[in-house]
Image 1 (cartoon, rainbow, N blue to C red):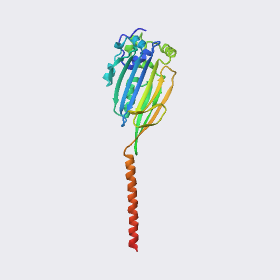
Image 2 (cartoon, rainbow, N blue to C red):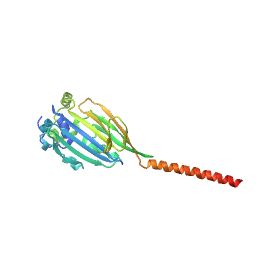
Image 3 (cartoon, rainbow, N blue to C red):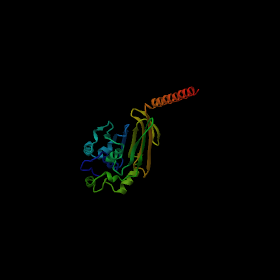
Length: 261
């Protein structure tokens, strides 16, 4: 396969084109930090090994200008000592409902992360945060390409026919890995992911998937709870008021009996 004559336009497009190359490895990390109001930050970290970097034409072949134009904060690619490269982009989202659309700017609407949402449930004494979604390994990799890249790759979206790409992915298990990590406020009380509690940002839970594996779908679920610091005070005040009300009632009954005598 010849090197594309045009620059690869997005971080995950670079990642997925590389996956079609035999012997190369690439990892994508998607980190989500959820704030107390349900807004938050999405961080995407992509690592390409030395071979992958060479096959796409080096650092100059990776252009993230489209992400910058879409409001992503793009950090210059970092060349690691072992010859691999790390790419980092971040973007804030303002409402809980903006999380999935923000992710789709990177992965596409039919990508591996689907229906990811965080519901913020206010209740007496605190706030509960409920995360759910799906992690799908059987995705159409060609969706991350475009006609310009296809023209540079002999008319094929990723330089391979669907059949050839499937065969190469099967022969190179683990060449494409997606790691999802979500940090939620408060204490993590339930999750089907790997827990890592006590972080500075709250409770963190993570999932990992090999996108070269046969099609699977994993439900993502996590619940955290942040207790209000005023809850014990409110309970105490409520108890005092109940006692005062009882005292007033008793005094009233005692005074009424004295008048009846």
